Image 1 (tube, chains in turn brown, blue):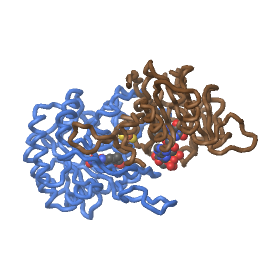
Image 2 (spheres, chains in turn red, orange):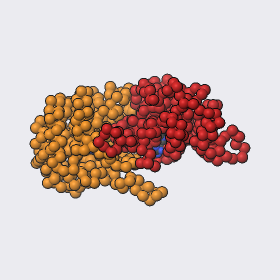
Image 3 (cartoon, chains in turn yellow, orange):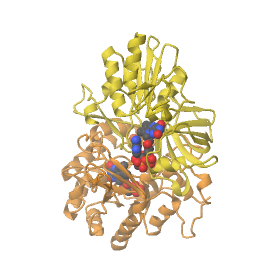
Image 4 (cartoon, helix red, strand yellow):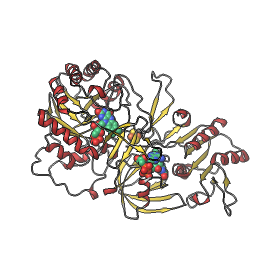
Length: 275
Length: 314
Ligand SMILES: Cc1cc2nc3c(=O)[nH]c(=O)nc-3n(C[C@H](O)[C@H](O)[C@H](O)COP(=O)(O)OP(=O)(O)OC[C@H]3O[C@@H](n4cnc5c(N)ncnc54)[C@H](O)[C@@H]3O)c2cc1C
Ligand SMILES: Cc1cc2nc3c(=O)[nH]c(=O)nc-3n(C[C@H](O)[C@H](O)[C@H](O)COP(=O)(O)O)c2cc1C
Ligand code: FES
């Protein structure tokens, strides 16, 4: 199922901020210019860090939204001190970037349509896949907190959107509820042949995506999030528990989220050890 | 840090006369350089090795050795997540010595390091002193002909493993036993004993290790630490305690290095808090024969290569 896409070598870059501005109430779009050409595969991420006194012990992992020529793009939410500092960067500020890192989403199997589910800051890798591989028969869903949280300028017209809370005056076409419910409703209405599911977002979304896939006997790939140190497989700080291999004497199998992941076959993950 | 713009011009003090990328000896072995990566912070030396940079050919450039992630007699699954907690001046880790076990390491990893010509020091930990001897024997019988395998660092100090390093590293007699059985199996490779800073008298332990046959002492491993999550009032790490590493422990590493050099005169490989060539110089100023870069190597796969380059006189 997983036609392995050819990897782009990782590199340590110096990067300059081109723009860093909100595209919704909660999401910020960061565009960097790297000191050498930048390439990536959808699902990969980069470790970003500051220079000078702001530099952190570890970089911050962010999924790559887009990258071409010298440009690398990201989408993030402020959740702590690092992302808060990130939000204060202005054009011409300098950063370091290590990437692209990790195992990407698989390419499309020709005989299947994609069902894409993204929630919040889970958007970048899924949107990047759509940008590269998407076709008319694919279905893509994005969920935000409320109408203001939707990064409208980035979302393709074909994507359907859900919001947790509807307010007066919100676009009628927005689905009130969670992304998986939206997907179920829409897939039931439009019908679906052989498909496969790709998802990134909160754990509950990933699990719901997996259930949806299992019900239809579709493959499902999810992009996981774990706290990271190095981002390149050096520290074992970011493990995801996988089903032990049948021929292995060990009753456990750990994968690194940064190198073996962040994209995993949802069936390989031991979900009850994560939740 | 991806170097230049941030880097002030390198200014080496007049007393610095060593060439960090020239051969030097520890015990029976000649090492190709004095700047190494520390155990557990650069995996088995085969992750991130292919990352490119505009400044270096590879992360191996100028390295005197890669000290590989500690391996144990049996594979270990390590501790629960989260295993890392970033702090303003470093980090706490509680990896729990996750590793593939020494047998797989000997079959798969060490031959690959040899094939790539990576100068290697193998880090070992055990639950009983005899196991050090058994692992060293296996190592010797697999790799006796290897050119790039330079030595063994016995990890007597990992503070994360309840049944492991803790006790070994605190008792001079146990330290001596672990070293003696390893020495017996390793006639022609360097033997280093890595000590914990979490003891009252590190020099006494270093002396015990040397008497039992260690060629040099690596100090320090991580410092026991704890971080509390204010919202929950609970320790951040599930195992409560972690190992503190990074710039915050530089003064501790320097003090332990000094104690050992002053009291015993033994060759010391300085570890702890090194990010820049200035940090490394401080260890050398106190008499360290080589240094290792740990946490900084995680953030920057070229950290050790950078230190080696900066310490090389034009
Ligand atoms: C593969 C991957 C891709 C990611 N992609 C994105 C993205 O595209 N957009 C986005 O907004 N966020 C993304 N994240 C989450 C992002 O890395 C965290 O929000 C960020 O590290 C928080 O840093 P902070 O300093 O603001 O938070 P703090 O809580 O102050 O950070 C403290 C430490 O915890 C780590 N940490 C905190 N929260 C997370 C988290 N959720 N996941 C991993 N590490 C965390 C930090 O890296 C740091 O080491 C991704 C995470 C991973 C693992
Ligand atoms: C994530 C991590 C894993 C480590 N694993 C090991 C290990 O397996 N064996 C060991 O002897 N030391 C281990 N250490 C300790 C380092 O080798 C080093 O002694 C310590 O971190 C201090 O150096 P630093 O401040 O440069 O990181 C580990 C440290 C970190 C941060
Ligand atoms: S973050 Fe270090 S191994 Fe994944």
